[in-house]
Image (tube, rainbow over all chains, first blue to last red):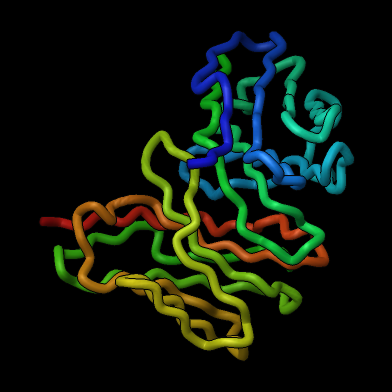
Length: 116
Length: 113
């Protein structure tokens, strides 16, 4: 069964260090999303890609967060420097295409980040 | 305008009972309303979804009721089972906004056997 792959599953990092998360969407999915889920809350969108282009990064804290999807397939989300408030689950999701009206998004298992 | 409000925060139901979770939205432009189920340590998984042109959708034990005029929708889980114990999120999106999902805060459901 096709699934969204994320790594690492867990990451502990010290404050002010850099950290990176990787996501491999379901094959053929043009749209990729990164969401952040703080414990006890619903996921919130950080950035959305259509192929290799960013279509929405309005909620991405660009002073410390960056995201790329260079070849329109897998994606990396980076935080530098990490802050205590960044501790959360980072979820990657993909869908066939946000342009086609096909709306079902499939989520990966997420990366649990703890900043100490 | 972008908020989705979900209630209750937590719910305890006896095995075989009906679980009901409610959501309200503000933005009338939303045109897709999914429910996601999330188990601890896992990502959310789509359970059932509805579009505003219908008032109800049923899949097995799961039913979405949709009230467009009230801007509310709800999830009903019939014959609730211990395996249904999870966190449930309602969400809303619009194709014009790139189908990005706006989530409710979640409901922790516990089904007692």
